[in-house]
Amino acid sequence: MQKILLVEDNDQLRSLYKEMLEKKSYTIDTAPNATTAYEKLETYKPDIIILDIMLPDTNGVEILEEIKSRKQFRRTPVLMLTGVSEIKQMQKCLQLGAAGYVLKGSSIEDLSRKISLVLNSFGGS
Image 1 (cartoon, rainbow, N blue to C red):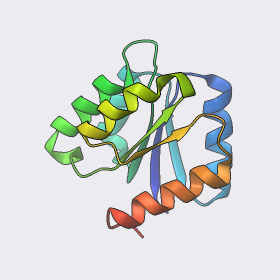
Image 2: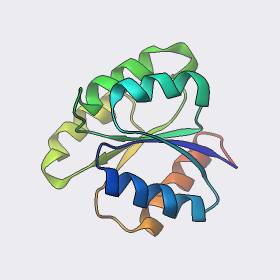
Image 3: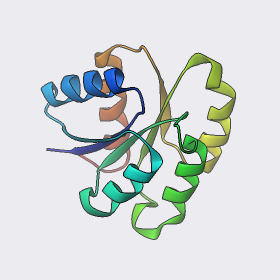
């Protein structure tokens, strides 16, 4: 199974996405903030990262920059999870190497489809 690291500070949304993606046969680990995400990156080694753009301890742009600066994660695809009001920040994320983005509130089918497309385009199965 392919492994996803889901970085989302909203407890309900994080739990919902985790539960629904597990039903789609993904292995999910979660992080509520950047600090936990960095810790989990070292041990979990995800195939893809779903990263909220607004977190309590930093923002997704900074985390994305850090992830892409690390040699071992440079090729790990990152899908940004964003609200409509954060679309302008998405341009910066795409320039920094994000594989794409998903709007919060999208259906689990849309999210799952986007994950599959990104994994396939990055050489995943």
